[in-house]
Length: 130
Image (tube, rainbow, N blue to C red; front, side, top):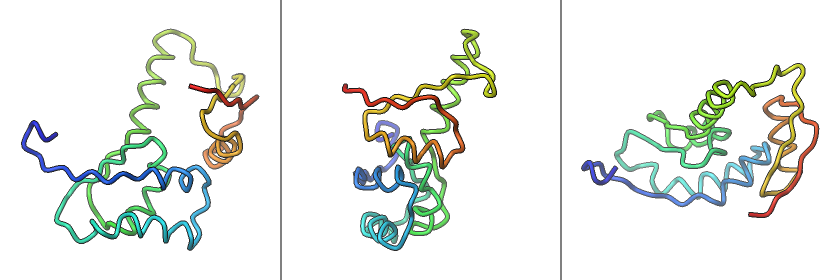
């Protein structure tokens, strides 16, 4: 983006990943989100790039801190590309007949929480090392 003359302010937010994964947005979670984003809330910018696939899950909470701006997710486009790839290769299963095995590099319970939050049924969840 900077190559095209667009000013970019990067805000590392890895501390927000466990909050997004937990699906629990209590006062403590909101305080962490606020502490991370409050320093930029008053800046003049129009677009927020949610640079982690998890952050779409907490977009509403981020919006509560940063206000109405353009929000760009990466999770939905990633899911769309995966859907298109599975469809193109004729391996997209019917959701009612599908066996879904979930693999995570994180904690199984976090993956279970996200699946439950998204109402996704699964057959197994396994942790993998990368």
